[in-house]
Image 1 (tube, rainbow, N blue to C red):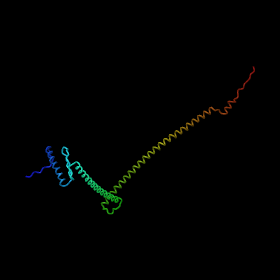
Image 2 (cartoon, helix red, strand yellow; image 1 turned 135 degrees about the horizontal axis):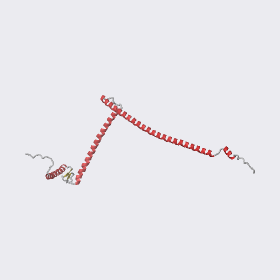
Image 3 (cartoon, rainbow, N blue to C red; image 1 turned 45 degrees about the vertical axis):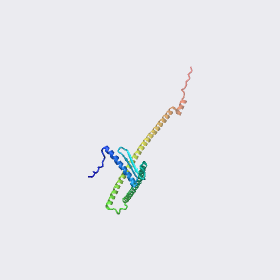
Image 4 (cartoon, rainbow, N blue to C red; image 1 turned 30 degrees about the vertical axis):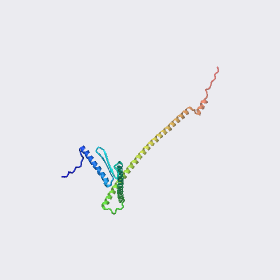
Length: 225
């Protein structure tokens, strides 16, 4: 009987796992070296054990396995991967640009339809859809127009109320100033009348003054003893 097929799965026994790793790692390194020699290929192999130990194998261009040869293979891989990445990015950009162009053309067509252009070839269903879109747009425009008018009305009412407040304040200040002015006029009138009355009480009339000055004296009678 032939040997049974080995099931590939994680080896649970630690000792067996380490032993298998050592054997298979050496076999893998040997195969990498043989591939490089037989096919004149650049090969770099980096392996880390379960414990974290590093193993490297690099061959090609008649070079021995050194850190530099591993770096050469890695740099070559980076360069080619970069070129492939750039090619892939260019392809993605080209696809995206084509997609954007198509979307732009579709939008231009829809815009023309919305403005009533190039609608002769539209089907009845397409015309119905266009009518529905325009009706919804008209409803939104009307609602926005009403909102703007209401906002403007509220703002105007607020300004009018503010102006009325200023007007009432100015009227109050004016009335207060008028009251002060009337009070000052009345006060000055009273003061002037008081001064005039006092002056007339003190100052005698000319006729009275003559009477006082030239009042005849009583007759003196002389008697002889």
